[in-house]
Each structure stands twice: as C-alpha cells, then as structure tokens.
Image (tube, rainbow, N blue to C red):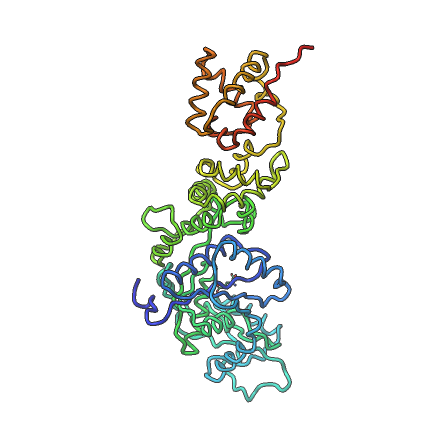
Length: 479
Ligand code: GLU
C-alpha cells in the first residue's frame, strides 16, 4: 500500500453506517465484518452510525433488526450507536462553514430553472453548474427560498482507493451538489463527511456502489481542509450466476442464515472469504481472522455467493463448537421435525452424549437436528415401508427377543462392550451380522439416519435401548 493510503499516526477507527432497511443485508454484514476486523486487528475502534435520515424507513423496528443482526454475528461496536438524523444541526453548521470559505453558495434557482439548466448541461455533456456560483450574493432576491450548493471544483477529482487503486473523474462530471435543501435539511454526502470527520474515522471500507460518493466526499474534505480517511471500496457480492445479488438469489438478510441453522462464526468465516483472501486459507478462527486481516487482501473482482462453500465452512465450525452450546442451539430446530420433541433434561442429556460424534457430520443446525432425530423420537415407533422390512418376519422378531436378553446381560454399557456383544450374538445365532444389525437398527432408529449401532446404544442408554427393542420384538400375530 502506498503512503497516501496509510493513516499511521492516528488510532485506527472504522465504522459501519447502515441505513435501516428492515434487516441486516448480507452485503452490509460483510462490510461490517471487514471494518470490525480491521479495527480489531489494529487495536482500534469500530463505531456504529445509523444513517436514519429517511424518517419513513427509520423505524425502531428497522433499526433493531440491524442491531440484532450485528449482535448475533458477534460484531460488537465501541460506544453508543450514533444517529445521523440527530446531527442535522452540525451538518448545517459545516455547510455554512463551507459557505464562508467560498466553497459553497446560496442558489436561488427555482425547480423549473434547475430542470432547464440540467437539460442544457446534459445536452452539452457535462453536469449542472448553477449560475449563482458566480453571482454576487447581494443580487439575491428577497424572501426567496434557497439551497446551499457546493461549488464543484474545476479540477479533476482523484480518489486513491485501497482496493480500486487511483480513480479519476473529470471535473465536468460533478455538479454543484446541494448541501442543504431549501428547508435547511442536510443532504447525504455532506452528512457522511461531517459524521466521519467528527467520529475521527481513519478508514472507510464499504461497497463500491459508494465509489462516486467517495469522490464527492473527498471534495468536501478538501474544501474543509480536513484529513481524508483511507477509502476502500469493495466490489459488491454477486449471485452464483455472476449477477448482482438480489432476492432472486435467495436469502438476503443475515437473520435468514441464522434461521437456516448457520452459526455466527460460520457465516463470519464465509463472509470474510467472500472478497478477501489470505493465500489459500479457507478456514479461520476469530483470532486468526483478526491477526490476518488487512486491506491488501481485499479483492478487486466481485465475489460470488456459493452455498456449498458456506456449508463446508459452517460444517467446520459446527465441528469445533462446544457441545453444550450446540445442544442449546439445536433445540429450536427440533421443532421442525416430524414429532414434537420436548426440550427437557432427557433430550439434553442424549444430545450431549451424541454431540461429539454427530457434530462432525452436519453442515447446519437444521441438519444436525435431523441427525439427532433417532435419539429423541418418541416411542413406540411405527415402522413403515423400508424401515419395517427387516422386522417383517417372525424369525427376525424372535431373534430380536433373544438379543434383548443378550444385551440385558451386558455389564458395562460402553461402545466396545456393546460392539463385542453384538458380534458374539451373531456368532451364537450362526448368522451374518446383517441378520442381527438390520432388525436392531430398525428397532432402535425406526429408519431414521443414525451412526454405528453400538454408538446409538451408548447415546440413548440401556433403558431406552431395551425399551425400543421390546417395542418391536413381539412375534407377529397371525390373522
Ligand atoms: N448508509 C449507506 C448504506 O447503507 C452507507 C454509507 C457509507 O458507508 O458511507 O449503503
């Protein structure tokens, strides 16, 4: 990174500045993550500013949705969240400071005049310039509403961007931007610059849909004689088809990923890799991500959403997660299963017992719940279709009866002892293991996916094992 892109002498301060839209957009979540990691990497601060100037959209519910999303993702911000709307007076103050410095002027054009000037400018291939920029303010008509406009400089606009490199625009591409509307309210780019300056933001990482805003904002910084932050405009996230991410591509909000059963650390790791790379390392713990994150690893090409990759990364984090935590997290997902399962102590105990094994096999909590179903489904099982097949004949059911007695004699209820007991039983019965295993599996799981039988028996315990066998072992009554 060249020296212009460094702000070494100050404490690093980044921010996330969402406009409340009703949910935390996945692209916004990634922006927040990058800013959070950069601040944490440098031992700096990560601030939150809610850009709530659109009063109709900025409801408390819409703001809470963003705060909840950030909270769930574990992206904690320093200090209180700042309201942009609440700072309108300060924004106006800076507009008047620009006026005093000769970088802004009062424009008395009517809406119709502005439209005519805009059409004329468009035809001439340039942006609008107001005639009032050069007029003597003494000529101002009395009692006429005015806007305060920025006097667009006549020089090219150059933005040194940490991701995009140096980007240049011709002066004629920028109009005399309105800073204050005729009702005195500030406009967007003014508010952002004033807030970022006052919040002492040193680095701004955000979507490249704000690149042109970055150019405009850098003009305002220059006019005020303020130090500019480092800008890093990251390409937006695209769908798997290469098009800009939209509803069509599925879930757009972080909360939808939560509902699908992704862990916050899984989504964080995935979003980190969506537009940032560090060699070919795919899996990151938080400590590793904080240690490795820098602006140099941000990619210039748009990243594509890839659910398979998300599943792969999330599976890794489920495998790493604490058993007791996973047990609590998986409970709400059990509700979506066929039978209602109570989140009681027995459920928790069985989940805890099985978790070390089962957590190595699931991509999401929803999948994990499905894989735990055999542990928890209520007795007696009604065996149907494929699941009923191994117990269709009397011979199998009678064998199951003998197995019930045999397993009842096992002293230590461990995987090894149970595994030996099953082998021994098959030998005594003089049958292949399948003739023992298949009926037993049917009785213990009712056809639900489950791991090795000895493991299943240790997970559910002696009483439940024998109980499930007992439910199925009665010989079929002949009609
Ligand atoms: N409020 C803007 C948005 O949600 C972000 C502005 C910025 O980061 O400067 O897109």
